[in-house]
Length: 83
Image (cartoon, rainbow, N blue to C red; front, side):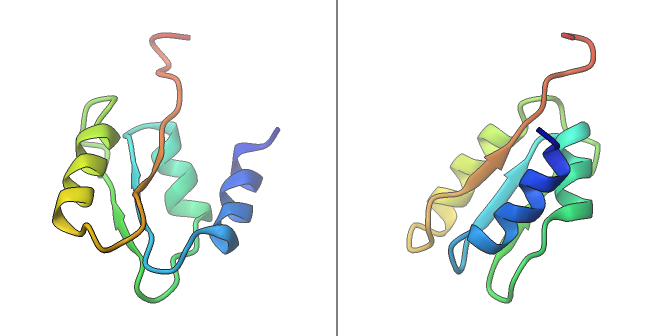
């Protein structure tokens, strides 16, 4: 399965006003290159400065900050060091 295709397909299926969060590394590259955000959607990215696992606290913070939005969508990929 091609992760880029999954992210591109997910773009059309995300709910309106969705919040998308991602870890640093490969998943960040997939999201920034292939995810199309619609008006009203938000994205929280580490900007390659976060540690692996940064999506978890981002998702928790997004849920507390905007409880009226759909639950955050998160993406992570295996660490190259763990592979």
